[in-house]
Image 1 (cartoon, rainbow, N blue to C red):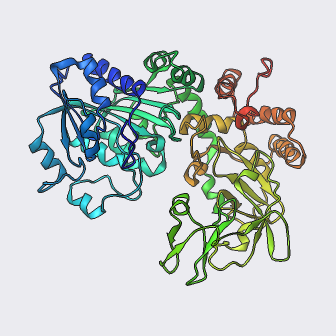
Image 2: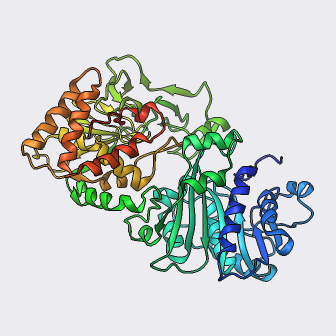
Image 3: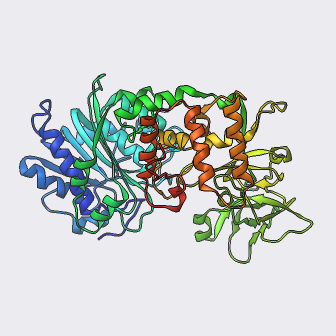
Length: 548
């Protein structure tokens, strides 16, 4: 196998066969496309995807692979036409990239690709704009360019199939999702999780689209590969297509375009929609009640390097550490990063120059104890305004599987991976414990799972400000029910050891708060009980058959 380059990891057979099989099924049952005369992979690598495509479409189709890497030439299949060029900004192009390829290539009915996943910028924005690319606003991954290219070179009613990372579902790619959902019929979204690519710690998604505008009745087939099913596939005991056929479900595509951030909420089945709507309608806009903040801009380890030229301390990335060099965030000069220049300003012991600091992994449901202390007054470190850390304050962990919230009563600082919510109105005397209980509830967690789809470990699962402020938090009314909720949440907060029974009693009250009936409660519990066997979520499960 050719080693990976340009952010590319070559596709395993189990995955390429799955994608080729799906494309064949979709096009074979589509009366609007009479024949597949030409299929192309614009980031073909060794040609694995095209080879597997040929197994299904046979020799009736012309297969073309494009790749910038000349090292693939010796291993490339002889029966597939190879073009050595850069698909995004091809050499010899006059005008836009699309103009170039439309002159060079015949009409394309299929595009299949596992493009580079890297967010590293190898093209300038000016060159991309000159090449005719439009989906390059703000932060974007390389695969966005290939998606736009595929759409442009496809014939009407043609199909593309892409293997992508799960960053497709993140906030930064809202405009890309809107483009796909409004311009194309999204035929398949399959979230496959991690480990399908060896030594790649990113979750994988397959998306297949048809180049024709969606109708109000257009449906998308959705699928998420469970942990247990993935183990069967990786061990060779089951084919991915078999798991897909067993676990798929369909939703109306227009649902994606009508939700707030064009989320591809594939885990929400049609039978879940009425319950989610009910929960959402009870929620208030908490952005009108809370201000949002993040803690000290420092990693959980407190590792920093100090510029020898301007004396400013600053953090560094793993890549910068590996390269032993970074550009100073302040004076922009190159500075060395090694064992001689690295210091730690988060300590495990207190002294006169330190303050307690709560880092992300200190925050759990109803607890946020810390044994860490940050050195104060280091030049260059953004400690934030001290008023941000005054207590009481609601804390939410940024990273992790699910929602971890607690309340700090100690005026401790927090790191940047801990979000802080404080009342906008300083005279508001509503109990934070009420809002904490709802944030930590199974009702809100169910809504989060179904809406944002984070139900297993990824390499970097995280909450955002937008997600937090979109959660359906019921209004505080101060009645007897609310007071009971506050009492039990307070009991969980002060307990030195988590009490599952108290948590379950509290959850009953929250079910009442949201007006849920026994069938709706059972739906929520069934969803949560089906989550992977992980310590991070096991406390959320309620296995008692007599609970409802």
